[in-house]
Length: 374
Image (tube, rainbow, N blue to C red):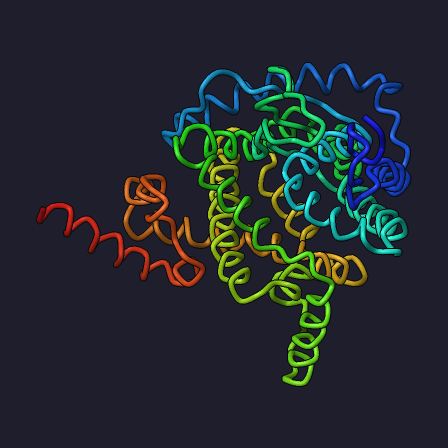
């Protein structure tokens, strides 16, 4: 396949994927993991702790993922490559619509490189920070260029080796404990998406609907700028609600964005809760690790402004909002009641209920009473 992302010589993708990769790898920096004597121990350790973590998570949550996760230790450039594959698959329908518009624009070629550079800079920035990632959120079909992921590429838990090693060295974490702690969070996400039968398709359905609603019309820029001015005149930061995506979103998109945010807050918060509870029992030094990562997330200054602009600050807040909801429900009603969130999409908490768990508990009790009455 060429860097245009098309095999048939038709409309090129609106993103030059080759440029995106080159920029991302440059921003990510050199991290020759393969040349390090620690690479072999990372791979063997993560293979073992991932399997151990899956058993712990299954026993604690009752969510049992089928089979065994693929534990893959990547360097930063490999993480970039894996995420570019996922992004191309996920955004293929939108790329097709955008490509058709750009093909009729004299600024199309320039736009492909500008967009690629921005995407590459974002991926490179994230490649320097990500410790672990569960990757089963992208469908295996409907991809421009064709092809399916091999079994070894599916259901993968990624660990970015250089970033893990850097934190272990800087804070003198015991490697086996720190790696177990990271694995607990990532395999919890695997349990959520594969141990809850409807979760994967529900999430992907929201993603697909979001992409269908995205407007490739350049006039959307004018509307976004108008909203930004309105926010500023009211004394609000226009990037506070969803970063750049929230700024460009229509009212229908923002409603869908709220639904996605609520789901991600629950999943991230539940992952943090499980990681914390199991970490206290099975990981030496867990309280200090938690403090270090919390401080890392809350970093201010220029880094904080970058997070806000990209909408990453919103993701970071998801950890706290979701975890507070999970703890409040468990403390008030017990873990068995929390399990109801996995019963159906309609049982998922809304954004408002995440901030006010009593509202979700009241709705859940009313639903249970109605079911009993029937």
